[in-house]
Length: 253
Image 1 (tube, rainbow, N blue to C red):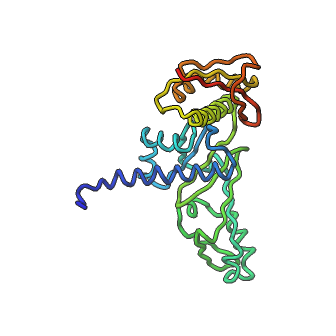
Image 2: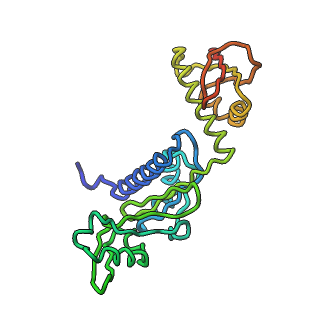
Image 3: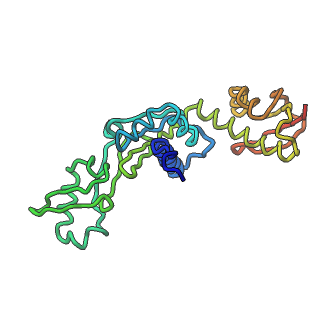
């Protein structure tokens, strides 16, 4: 391969997008948030200026948000504006060399500046009149912050995901689930990918409200010329959406 054809800046940008996206998805998994349920905010304190420049690019930020299904990316200068950071010694890893000084090391850690560890550096501290150097992997990091904010850090990057579900986000999540159900129905009916359809449905009020609120999105995704709510008893396929029963009829146009 001709090395002159390699765009190192582009490669690094793509690597950053993939890494931040994966961090966000890991937080989603930890918080048990369904991937089709949109969330409001992803907070990131980049590890360095290069990573910040990538995330300040609206195109790259949009890729992260789209992959993680989050509405907004907020860049932080300092994560302590959002959460309080707690440092604790990993007794299993440092116990053998710390010996009787383990308690004093823990007390010193409580007063230490966490930024050095968050940036991936070793931490030097004094305990019982002795000097100790702790590697990042020997220190357990925890965060105290707003309810429904899940946090984590990796390789010097801090990320936090707000999993608070507003009524608007819940409606959009239901609409996305409805889209997935009907895409499966399209396949079950052996419809061609380009076939236009008409959809009629009967659904409980909250689901019908979600569908109506996102009608334009659903019609575009499903190639639906019509998407209309009808009275109960008009037949159709019986489906379950978010634990509730809906009836759906699909007609090829």
